[in-house]
Image (cartoon, rainbow, N blue to C red):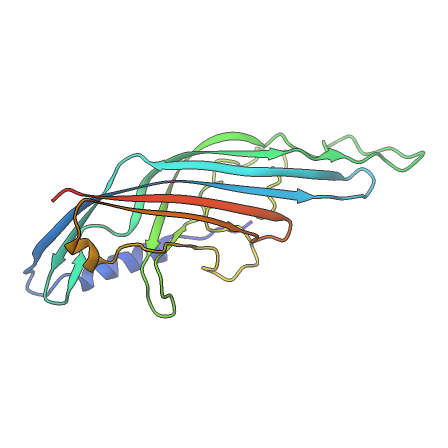
Length: 238
C-alpha cells in the first residue's frame, strides 16, 4: 500500500506565493474570493475467483466530503501580472465519510476436503464506515502539465480504514485515496483534471460566483470502475 507525502505541494504553493510578491512589497488588490469544495468518489470492484476456499465476488469503496471552512483568495497586481497572494492552493479544512464494503463469499472446498477456519475468508472485520479529515490541492499548469488538476496526499483511508492488529485490511482493489488508486500508475496520472478552472487573471476581473463542476468515470484498475465528482465554488467578497 502506498504512502505519499504532500510536502511537494506545500513547497510549490509557497514558491508560487514568493513569485507573486514583488521585492518592494508594493501590490494592488484586485479581488478577494472565498472558495469551497464538495465531492464524492465511488470505487466499485469485482474479483471473481474459482479456487476452492478462496473469496469471490465484488465490493466497493465510497466517500463523500466537503469543506468545513472556506479558503480565502486574494488576487493582487504586483508588477508581474495578477497573482494570488494569500492562498496556498490547498483545501485544508475538509471532512468526510468513507465506507468500504466487501460482499465476497467463500468458495466451497474440494470434495472430501475442508477450508481453514482460523481466519475468516473474506476477512471483512476492517470494513465499514469511518469519518476522516483530509486536504486536497489544486495544482496549476506548470512545465508539461497544461491544465489545472486536483490531487491529494493519499489520506482518505489513512487512518480511516486501518485494520486493527490481527485483522486483514478490508479489500479495496487498489483504492487508497482520491487521487491514488492504482499502485502501478505513473505519478500524477490519477489527478483529476479541472476544466474551466479560473486563472488568477480571471479571478482578478470577474464578479459574482464561479462554479467548477467535474464528473469523471475511469477504470484505473482493470477490475474496478472509479467515479469521481467535484464541485468547487468561488464567491467574490471584495
